[in-house]
Image 1: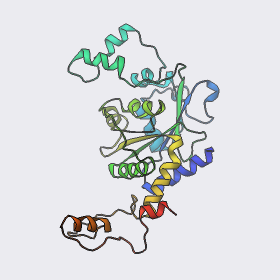
Image 2: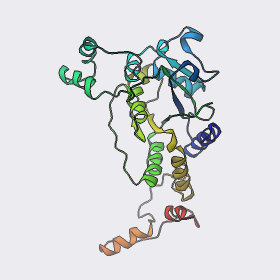
Image 3: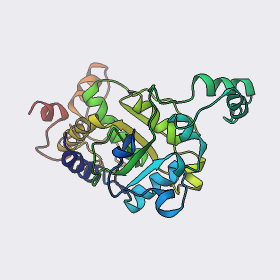
Image 4: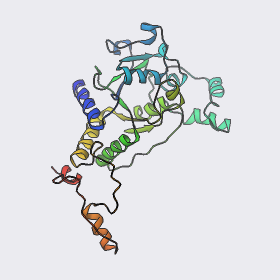
Length: 282
């Protein structure tokens, strides 16, 4: 895919899901030459240091393009997870009890064995992030801040193509690394709840959830969302209707009749709308 194709799919994703913010496109930076032109370097350009969640907030709220190297960070966990700083035995002992476990030994084991770390022998010097609709590079991962109902539509689209349920491990802290590192390490998709730092300092609303995907999965996701929309089952087409004995898909009536239960009117929200299967077979 070209950069322009990523940009256009980013715009389409915003339209299909009526997203409040543009999805965030991330690319790892391995050398100074990899840094895209025109991106904000917080410490060099403004004398500021940011938490990763604050950088994400600036991208989605102000449409900034930002490059974060080691000197730009004000939070310890991205530096650790992305391998931009080393940890020795004393560090593991000291930092290992900071993970909200009752048992400090369990907490230390979590840091040593389970904490998300970038699986690359060579470590990046940082990363660059920008709105997907306007990024000037091919991203590696894409993060969407959205509402649970939008997550529902996203999961319906990914499940439609993959035939798989999305396995999710949720942690109430360190959402910056839990959202990004597993996907950078090869996972196709991930869901993360914004952590206390996201809420207090990244200004993330209480009804927002983070969805992250590998960038090459973007066409598949958009395709799934479009199929759902054409079948009148997309995010924009679902409407609240608390009617009882409501019309249902034909197969509901068929199964209810087999089970000796009541049947009713066949559901078709809009006359002439195809089913998801019919859309798939177009």
